[in-house]
Length: 196
Image (cartoon, rainbow, N blue to C red; front, side):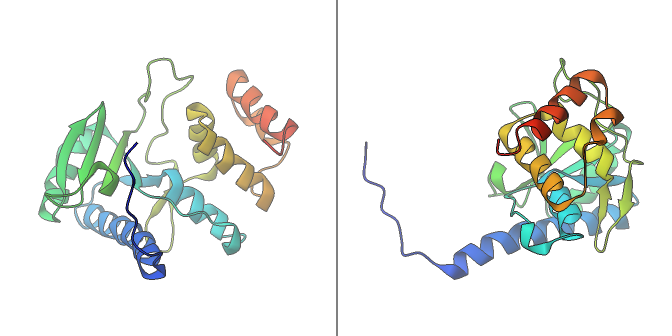
């Protein structure tokens, strides 16, 4: 294995990486709102928005921006995002807007389509953009819809986000009853094994 040459640890670079994601999120929200394209912020930024309402110290950073769009609004979103300097790309079954012509997939806004399953075997489809509410700077998916999305995806990071919700008191032991049996069982398992 080749040696990797790393530069010195830089607090400025660390802070800038977090700021770039936040700036991308705010630009995306402003572009879509100006173009009157319905959307909702999902993923790690939505988790951060909800957790920050209770405990700012419990917020985790995220490396990308995820949004929910209706397929019927996708062409309008493409036009608006292109005018805002983003470049549309479809790669590895993912629709995304790269943050400029030289950007990588990590420097992108990833799209999930409302009312559609992300994977064919998902228990239920993604929520509609109407399952959202205004935040300080962008529309954020509702807490119940976000929990449902995290239960559907069921990756390690999704389970970590659900534990964060439990830890700060956003969801409690009554929540599994809100979901279909398979998703309810996943959430109950998280309550039953709090340490992971």
